[in-house]
Image (tube, rainbow, N blue to C red):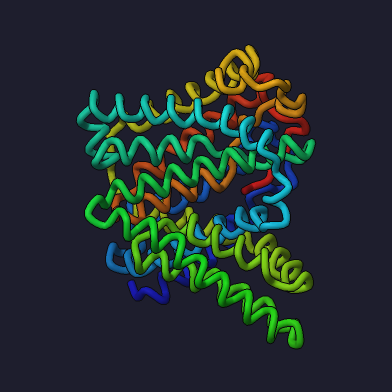
Length: 388
């Protein structure tokens, strides 16, 4: 099939599924919550690609840059919340609380993933090697949390969870390519800084006088960052997140508002499109993936429960030595995960050229966590979480 025709079919399917993802019929709340994770889009992609073979493998490979764009879009939405004016208001105390909650999840899930990979050769073959890089990627993606419509410090805690998770995935990408590890780290930071700074300068000098061009410029920023990360074999999520953070830190206020509106409006369609194409690229993998995913999700929830139930002062000796108590806003730690976890996992798979076992593992873990969130007291209130 011609790549342009394949692209048209996938776009139409993605828009159609997005429009139909929440019909006006009455379904159980859990079913709607699970559909919001994006699993139906991935299943439709599997049907279009490996299932029916409507798009050949060569055509799908030509669509990989669109996966990078979808991942980068999710990263840019996260980067909107990292602008300097907001980050500098986060106190050292809040950073310590965030680290105390995030690091146990990161370390335990990484360790379990490494144990699984080394104990089950079939699972390790699906996930790929080296096992430490795979474990860090899984642990980093599992550390992220969806931002919640609740108290400000609770939302900031979800933000810090994702910061620590994204940092772990950056390290995993570097470890997956040990011969270019330093280059990978430097290009991630310097490339994002250059693109974000250049686009902010253009916005300050040109877009202020021509505000009608802001949507085109915003799309160009994300496209440039996603294209750079794809060409340099970097995590599109992280590069686009840093680019957006720098752009939003230095661009004029009207431009920032217009860019935020554009990114938010196109969030769901591009997330659906990215999952459709990713699903079509999937190839057979070990059945152990289906068992490992919920095990990782249960461990993540259990570690969160222990941290919150017994108090930060009893879990982290560093926090116990400090003269102040943890803020009460952290009494209900977030369990739900959004697009950030899935995008980080897909970006790691894309860098390695792997068939997507890490993506499937994380998506199944997100679905399992969504199901557990209905029964667990750790769910933030109110229940509805943002996609990213």
